Image (tube, rainbow, N blue to C red; front, side, top):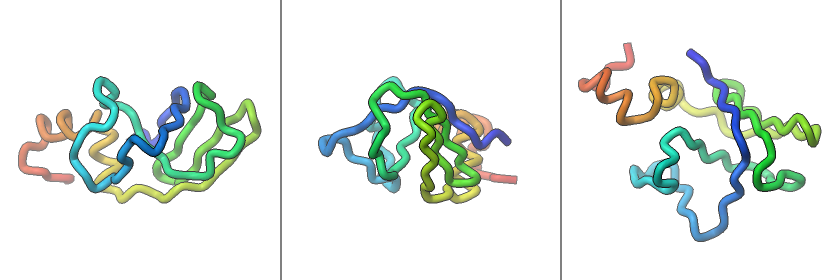
Length: 98
């Protein structure tokens, strides 16, 4: 299972709800988005960023930034690896993680 996400950083303001326990969509049309809460000092909107969900690491190589974030529970990692909640439920309607 791939636990790495690569893409561009999008710094969210206070108007975005980042409660990871809520099922609402915060970034419509961005179902593959991941919200990492970490120190954003030195990270700019649009920077190339890599997040390792299994190790809890955020890396912005161009700026030599390495940060630690909370490791996601294995069940959440599995859902993300399947392509998100909708894709996971289409494949596993019984919520089976086996």
